[in-house]
Picture (cartoon, rainbow, N blue to C red):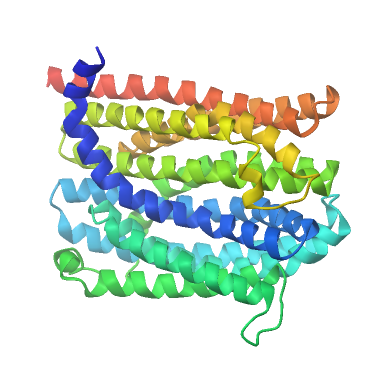
Length: 456
């Protein structure tokens, strides 16, 4: 049975992995920045500052995914137009996406600044944690703008199937972020020790350089010459902007509903105590790493789905999507085993605090259980995004995380006294709900496309 499945989907496994692996590298880069920030702060400062990283990341990731989601609106459109060989339209879409993303970056920066002054003091967090969190969040807020410039050119290149370059930029950027982070946090080579603010400064420098390199590559490379004939940085067309926003805004909402649920969980856990919050940061940063790998597979699924959709090749569309499901199930099964078997070891990557480690170890077991649901739900979103189906999936994410996940987590955590574990059980149930409903939506939409094409 398994040999027949492998034979049937083998060409799609190869195509999808060839496209996905570089995207995975660049997607992981977003999470790796925050993961390395946690590791550096955990080893070179103290538990209070690590808790500050948890608080900031829970707030900033919500803001970040709004920007990332809007930038993702470009990719399926580029893939579809490329499938139709409409190269002139690709350049015009890039122009509009760049303007939209810069404006969104500025608005998100203002939103974070308002949050620093009016919100963060009223979240019932430990005062010392808040004191360290403010300057770190301030630096990250500035980095949103160059990050979205990077995303614009990254999503354009990936929509055309050029995925390796963004991966290399992300790898070198993260290497620089680690080096500068250690220098600024620890205070070496003549620099004054900046504590947690040091990783904020290193992240800002990293993202400015990444935006510069990626934009230079796309605008100067011969690969994109025929696509950029109509590109002008100042060209703005209302209809094209709406076209991008119709995909980008729901995608931003999809990511927001999920990430805000985990951010909300972090805030709830912060009311329990700084030790629990630090433990949550360790477990969630490891789970976020596997999620971003799954997100890379999902992005590749979006590109392949969009390309096949543009060609009206619905049989290949469905088979390619199913192959993506197979790949992510296999990978997330492997990570689930690692989380469960190494749950007592992995927290030491971040800290040696004897109070934090056992709590983080318990959370990693729960994270192991929700790996499969986390992977399949994000692939489902990616496939549906490729055919332009974004509104119903957005409602599904809201239902899963804010009608099921957070309320159940609150009840289990506080009403039934399960604490931080109870909150994570609620998140797991939310992921399961999203996974099942999105798969049913995928089955319905792709089968309908094949039936309609057969009738025609």
